[in-house]
Image (cartoon, rainbow, N blue to C red):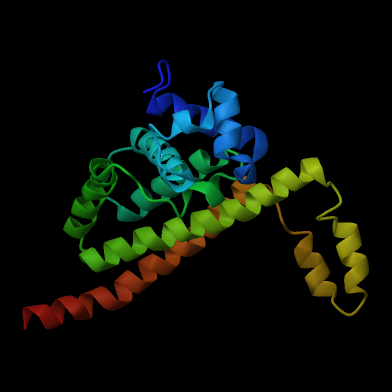
Length: 222
């Protein structure tokens, strides 16, 4: 085993490389150059790039676990807190949502540390386990999609400032779509937009729970 190189150092260097070059730039060769080792030395710690991405994602989830407040008395507030922490951690790294969302977490205890307290709290509050799991999945999917778009726009503002030009968009739309033009100018600060959209998602989950849960409970108790 190469001296001075640990699994943790490899993952840390890979996250730095992600910030510098984006997901396409995270290669074994580039990582070896950053660590000043030969590429085969990395295979002592990680078998391939997918395992590297999994370890990077696990590191991010570990930070999320550290940042999450303990569950409270309101499952909706817990979900909102989770969404905000998840978004912040994805935004912390270039291409964060694209990189971390589909990876496999390599530490099962970490997954339990994040999810188990939420599931316990939410089922005590009246959600079924299926409802709790679905709610978490829906919110994660929302955050991933929102941040992918958010990061694309933020990064394009640096590399290609005209990519999302409203003036060019308006000119292309012509005069037959005035409402579509106006809607394009309604996009506000990403933080405010995130909170607004998150509220819509949570309202929908709450409405579904209120609409379906009481009949379900009545059927179970008959």
